[in-house]
Length: 397
Ligand code: JHZ
View 1 (spheres, rainbow, N blue to C red):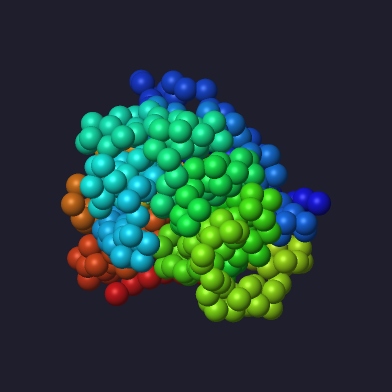
View 2: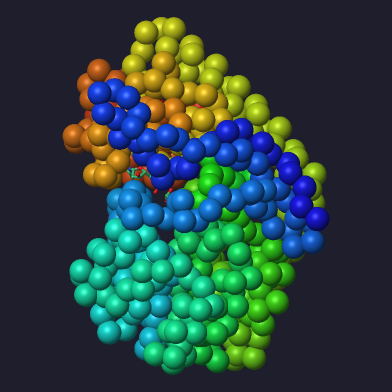
């Protein structure tokens, strides 16, 4: 049974960065109620009412996975490790975005699946065989017919975006070779609870996974987990290594240990999530108090990164241009637009943070190390970053 533990109020579609003409919003915005539930049968944490994926993964998809050095390095490292460990001849990536993972493979070795048509065009143009479609059983059957069993299927920050997980896993079972491997990574619910990073909940993050939940869900599709990695990426992610029940892989000790840890942390209890929701409310109060105090002193505050995550914060905390003047973002197709819901203008960073900025809210807090390195001058002249994780705080030199 699913029970709601967190209500993040009315939220827009995070990908709907707005264009304005003559200072008037030209698009009518869609809002929905963002509430999050725990299912005591599967231990899965999911949005109580996901929005229609066709409204999200359009031909105007804004996010480009290759916008951070951290992620470029991470994709390079994982592709190298996967090649070395599993020696795949035929690999497929679900949700290939702008090709940040694909580019580490030879064109004939990898197939891309990407439903956002603007992104699928990018990888197609680069010469990768790209299916511009959602990952479904139908597509998996089509791929199996054409290419036979796949040795490796990979997905990063994709599977948690798909409402129907049974369809995803059944589709994996169809095209994965007997000893093939399905590797996927997504933000980890354990890390979200630890970091109080409630901004990991937004329309696209339909689920946040634990080992306990994925272990249960895979069973129905005759799949199992044989290894995991806990990662620093995106503020704490989990990578699952999955195979068919009948395959040769034996379960690593790490899997058993994490299962025990999750039980100890009570990730299988509703009360754990209810407690988290109280911490979220406290975080909102503290962030608003801090921003208002800074503003009263006449200081200039911007947002560093117009991330999808930050849309949850701005809309839940009701933060608009009265508190944050503008956001900077390196993604070209976000620049000149306005954040969904709260309409904060987005600018190109034009190199470093401007001299007249006193505080920068970390919309991209998950890249704090990379950002601190880039913005040494801002910190040296007394500029401060504002972070809401794991608690509301200022970050200086
Ligand atoms: P970033 C997106 O979420 C959407 P977002 C998606 N649903 C998902 O799961 C994750 O990605 C993986 C910018 N930036 O990556 C780039 C700077 O401006 O945390 C990005 O727009 N300067 C698929 O948007 C944003 O910040 C910088 O120096 O929450 C960060 O977004 C750096 C490092 C980033 O994901």
